[in-house]
Length: 86
Image (cartoon, rainbow, N blue to C red; front, top):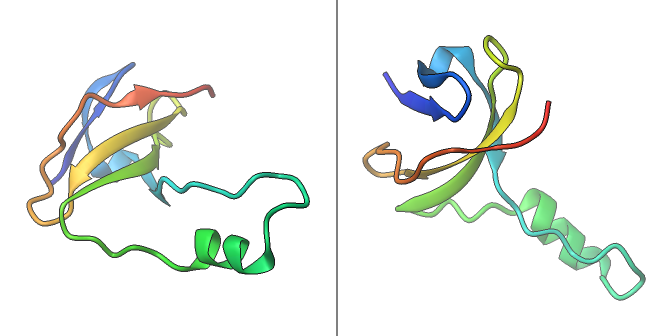
């Protein structure tokens, strides 16, 4: 069981959350970005072993998107979650 530290509700079971995927850096929203840059940003994951910043939605709680850094090898949460807006 993974306990995710919600900044509004405190530590909660991962079953209360919907996984939003890894945090991604997107190309600039102007004409300088190529199609391949967008393809890599949206469809090619790192699949890294170690720290990964992820986005989670607290669907059964405060309904807030939060950012969590988790070690993919140990599943240990490495930071306090940062909350977004509802």
